[in-house]
Image (cartoon, rainbow, N blue to C red):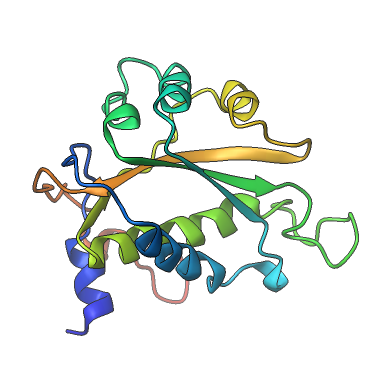
Length: 181
C-alpha cells in the first residue's frame, strides 16, 4: 500500500493536542496542499483564516454548542483554521448561472480542500477534527468575513495527544451497485 492510501486508512479525528506549537513552515506546507487541490473549473473558492489568538479562539468556541465533542478542541489546539468559501464561484460556467441542479459547488470544493489538508496534517504527525456543528453566521462576524464569504468549518490543528479510534464503517457491499441501483 502506498503512503497516500495508508494515510487515508489511518487518519482519525483528534480532539486532544499537546502544547507543542505548529511552526509557520509546517502551516505553509499545509496551505500549499490546499493551493494544489482540485476544484470546479479551478475556481479555488476557498479562503482560510489561521486563528492563533487565544481570545479569538475563545470567541469562536462560543459559536460551538457545548454538547459538540470538539468544543474544548477549539481552544486547546495551538491553531484553529476557519475554512471559508467564496459563494458563487464554484459550479458556474463563468457567469452567475449555476451549471448543475446542485447549484453552488463550494461545499464540494471545500470538502476536497479539507480532506487534503487533514490527510497532509496526519502525514506530518498532526491531528485535526473537522467541526461543522457551530453557528457559521456568528463565526463569520468573529473572523470578519467579507460579504459573500461563508465559514464552512472550523478545524482545530495540533500535535496529537491521543490515538484516534477507527469508527465502524459500512461494508463495500452495502453501498456499491453495479450498472443500476
